[in-house]
Image (cartoon, rainbow, N blue to C red; front, side, top):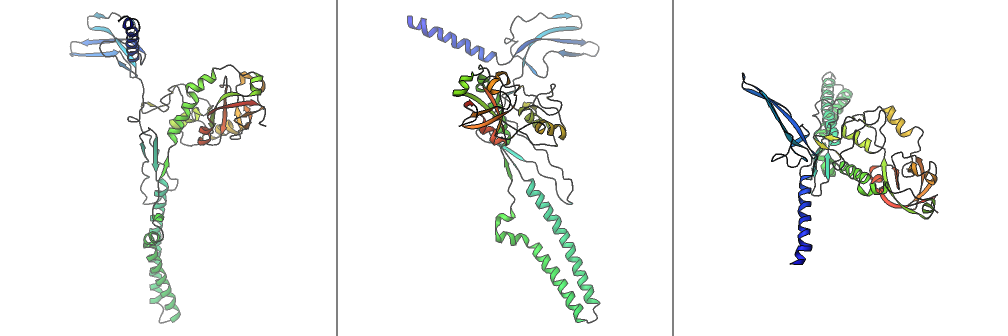
Length: 396
């Protein structure tokens, strides 16, 4: 009985407190004033204030709000009360995940008779990863084929008519009759081959008649890269003290994150601008401080809601950001923590995981024992994101 009182009972109290806290401290809650005004002549009432569109009223009177509920007032035709409003927590699970949608491409040169491109389809597998398929290339080739078939059919009919006219006016001339026969036979043969081309291709190889869709898994990998850059492991290395020259000489663990240059895109939608911002400094006017990376009410990077998109930028600003006065040789250069100075200063060489890199960027946002490796692609950026041993100077 004494063991129960001394050990088990306090543990149960602790677990109870933890359970209550974990269920009530999920979002910040604040008392909001709500004003109700009554119009006795019309028999209506208007309500203003209260919880905003980004908040939800707490159930059961607001026990999740800290402090005592402020007192309301009543002044004839109006009354005020206070409600407990909590921030809506934006979550995204594999079941409720908002699947991405594609922007249908517009052709610079329209193909007569071609239907619009179909919308790409996306599905989430059991692990939550999203895979999207699009068949725009196949649809485009199919549209060209149908258009070309129509033109070829018209030309074949014209050739048939020319052959017939030559025969009619030949006046028994054997040469003209032979010429007209060749035109007629050639037009009919070409038209038959054209109309039977599907059967011919299918007999050669059935895959020649099918256009397989492209499969993309890009979006989930971008989200994983965002987690790697801002996760708890990355932050722990960021908060570490700068290494000494002796530690750099002997080798010390550093956390590397891969960065890659997002390709230029004319249609700069929100998702693209958020991805560019996540990969480094925005070209042009910088980030859009008045916006968040929220699409259809959900964060593009759900685990890191503080990402803000870039402001839209021109091609000249894009080229200036990534190419002017910069040595961004992919997988050969890095950005080091400028605050550490010394052997991690600009133009120095370091050895990371038995590969020599040159420091070509001051890394104003990099601190502690962190480096950024410039990468040639998303796959390389993911592969370069790792913990490894860093030494000063080139590798032996």
